[in-house]
Length: 480
Ligand code: G6P
Image 1 (cartoon, helix red, strand yellow):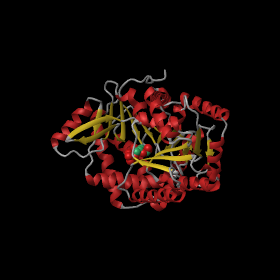
Image 2 (cartoon, protein in one colour; image 1 turned 30 degrees about the horizontal axis):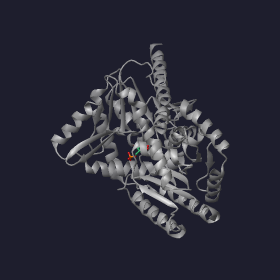
Image 3 (spheres, protein in one colour; image 1 turned 90 degrees about the horizontal axis):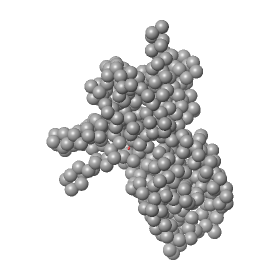
């Protein structure tokens, strides 16, 4: 049953801000690469089915009408529908409302929120643009699944203009407490649009709870079990922790290519234990706190000098948004300081890379890492934690995981940390470096069982089945 779609007649329309494809211009030609992302893998069996589609932004501005047409045609072959955003829309909808208002607010950073009215105008109009493009693909048999905070008002717009079988929405990032959400001048419109979905999913119980309480407080919704009732309509709220494609990570990790790269990587750091971190450039990831805890480790345990390395991979992201530009400079400075203060001839404490790695190299880094250090200050789920666990087939390792990442609710055998407590984090890192092989194996195995069972296919099936149940229950009610 693992990779099969639950039974429901009709097609599925997936809508997310980004399409699961990367388009680059190379030597004047367009290069299309399928995304390795978890969402793309999990939903692959849906949108590639006949009559099913995925609508989203291809992340590129076409230079000419002919190029636009070429992209459209190429994507059509993959059941993808592009929505093209112009520079203003990118600046105000994507970088503005989505990533300078909703993202910081949902990650508990109200001081980073830039409440510019023009951001809202564009957020509303781009969501409308998505609804208009979606319309021809929606029949009464279509299940629409909208993803993430960039499209919070889309369920309402779809409901107004089309009559799908069901609308689901998944919020991939944290949902803040009502006291924080209240500060948005557009709080009512956002919640009214969102609650037009039949089912709203979150990674954790805490996020679902925050959302329900916010709807109670702002929309005066009545909450009964997992159902919200307001203005004569209702929607369901539930928890679906997202997983990864366990088998894919496992097989890559034991492949000759990844094992080979892993040995090469280890050979670059002879006699050293590797502490790995992998994340997008983001202030929610706790990069500065990570560097502080690591520096403290070097100060308090000078015997580790020359014997440990923080291998830090930061994937470039949203670099036109103010707070991201600042953070990048701050990280450069902090890494520079640590390396300047603690290096000895032939050894440097931090290896910092600002780029993304191809899948086989990333897998090799997971294999080689003695410790995976995830200290997010707030994180919806954090799939890196699960990817590391799935990759630990031949080599041993320890997962040090923030209790503020959704994944910590499932991976109880990781070493959990409060990322704001620098001394505690430093002590836990030390504990991870000293852990016996026996304890490492025991903890890893327990975590692997969880990641294997609750994989991304399980996640998709569960969400779709719940949506189906809600549809059937609503129909029985109407028939009565
Ligand atoms: C997070 C969000 C996604 C988003 C991704 C990459 O995981 O939950 O919705 O697509 O980051 O961010 P970007 O801004 O590059 O799309």
